[in-house]
Image (tube, rainbow, N blue to C red; front, side, top):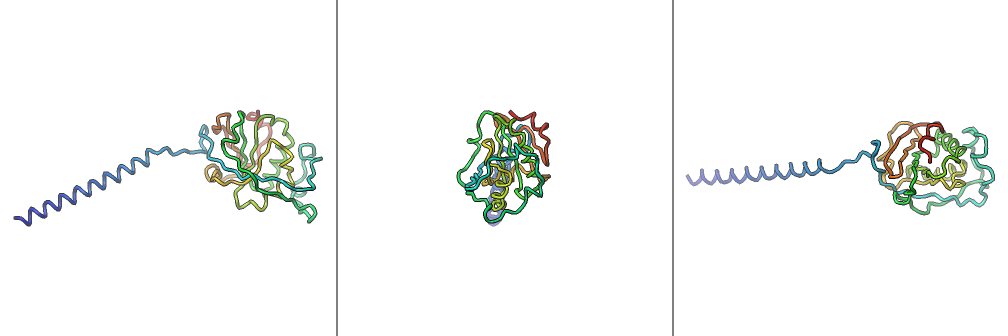
Length: 215
């Protein structure tokens, strides 16, 4: 009789413990589901966390007399020509730009790009030729960290640092992971004054299409 009572007590304890564990697991699962999961790619979503390591051109022989804004569009082949030793661009990564630093009261353009991509070069040249439209809107050129060695040539060829409206650098916060659609490059993300996502464009985009969002 005592043995039966003991087994019954042990069974009740085991059942209670199992139920408690189940309740704890369910509670944790519920808590996880209740946590807000932000889809930063959804229109109207807040801007994904941004931490951008800025690139600064320190080339001594910087040619600022002629920029793509004042020239006819050169071919991709010409823009991608190799530099000889005397023309080799020099620069450094100095400074960090975050979400707070891009709060300038106007729409913001963030272009995800590959500095070795001809379509990215063509889109950059198009924007530079129409830089007059970007009186208030800012434009960020953001590349993945593995593209860091190729950034100096891109900056030198495209005269990026000649334009105060532009900032260029590499991602160090996972912004690209949150925003890249894995479609065509370049990808241009456009945010409003409150840094809510307005539109995402992939591939080369006509300036007339971008004009709707330029301020």
